[in-house]
Length: 115
Length: 113
Image: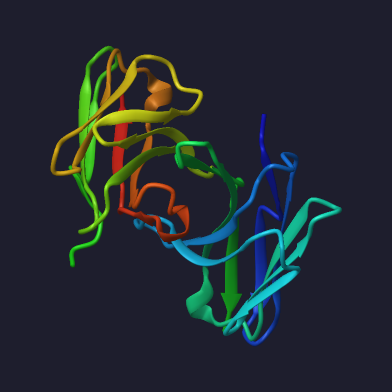
């Protein structure tokens, strides 16, 4: 089953606007929630990440909001730029006792920023 | 630093054939994970290698196997290819336990005809 659900599937935003992508998870044992940005022909690149002990993390124009009780987290891109046009994936992970871990990815949001 | 490198970039195979994909991790990394990304979908975890052993495995059949060499490079082997195996195969490297510093390669695009 899909461990991490992501919406919307696609998003069109005007330059300078705010892009918001939402994710929800089921497994309360997840302890790390990253967002990845992927351009065509490239592998995903880590954008920003949060652990469940904080409710918000901001890095430049990118902010993660985390709601532990609702099991939801979201990515906000402020002052969206055409160069932000890419596919964004939320993910979640937990490690086992050996330290091994794997990422559970959402289905992705294709963001298009119109000049 | 070249980062994570994968070869080949593209590959076309026919059903029933076998394929080997290769990955060289980022310098200093000792753990390699493989993911399958179908078109329009998020990556799905196949397995993770550390110290030349498979440490974790996702929900993939035994047709998918791997190997890690002493220099930390890794291979992904897929036997008896199916049309549904067509996807972008991503390799990611990190230090064991440091998923927060996991870097992905550009992937190998596999097409099964």
